[in-house]
Length: 101
Image (cartoon, rainbow, N blue to C red; front, side, top):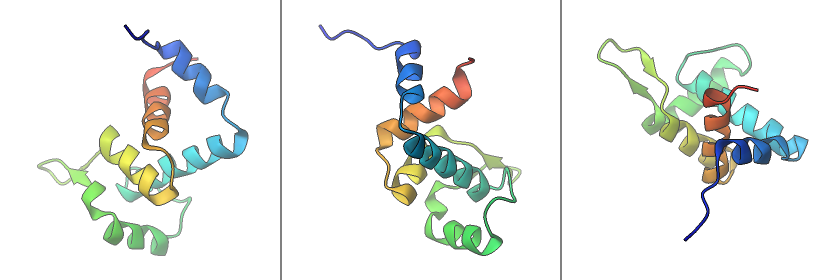
């Protein structure tokens, strides 16, 4: 039987990433938040507009037209846009939203 990895081990993995990899994950995550329009200001409107056309399948809205943050779509976007391993993107998102330090 395979031993399960807990949240603390995953958090440690994220904390031990090389700084440039961690920065790339942060940028990719932030770019997704810009893509779905829950934050703004860090990337040019032109580049985000281009992303919205190219990565439209990763944008979900509720019945009122408001953006929905999707862990799956975020992971996929981060992986595709920044050429990052999808599992690492998913771990980063889980770490960012579910763990406290």
